[in-house]
Length: 336
Image (tube, rainbow, N blue to C red; front, side):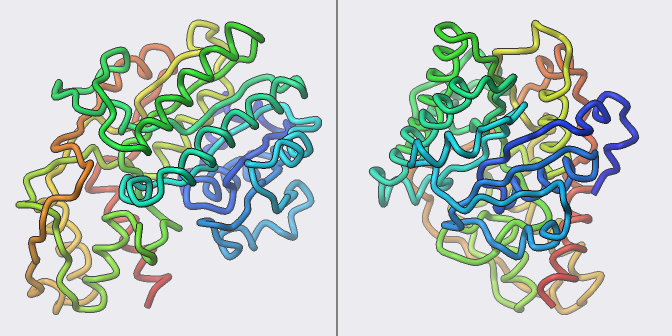
């Protein structure tokens, strides 16, 4: 992981109490680790529906780490978790477009009702700043590239609707109650601790697992769809910038959290094979299978990161090549 202590702005978090919801998940556990490394006190709230205890077990002996096992669908649990908290990083959600299409009710309960519970609890407990995971899916059917924060289309899935509703609620809670919020529209985040298992595994860990098992990865469609794949340390940097910025204009905004570059799925598989073949030459010979296009998927995704550069001084730490190299090394050491 990037050493974020090198940035004096981030060292201001030492001694601060930060609640990370979904803290046992992929992104949440990485945020917990970075915050603990900076000397912050971390409260992790998770119900382990998609997160894993092994992601955070390395923190259990740290006196600055506290785990609350609970569900954001319980307002009482949210109120308990927000007590004496300075900042909230709200990562808890049910991700995945296909999951939301298969079960829109549960996605709405967690992503909308749970989100509202957290906003209410943050307001009631005087939380200073509420940073939340938004989504690039909010751009919906907009075909404009690159994606600019104030120009969105119609949502293409129940998941996208829930994430857009989050942005609307956050805006209202600032205007009605004075709670400072920032939404981060994540663009295809990948990296260490991203789960390769399960029906809704993300594409990069899924492809890595397939290739390491000498199985053919399945690309939905012809492989020309493209994404702004964003390495986890870029996401950590964005969250830390939002927690520590003193620029008042930067608050109560929504930001793309990305690299500002896009990669086709075919190119992605080739890059994964190239990196994995250095560790296992047989992987270079594996062929790709093409399946049907996935319902609810947008063809292309590319973020403009100009807003975050100007208001937050964000500079991506990892491009796709550096990120894939780092991720492959982690998976190789973790899955073999």
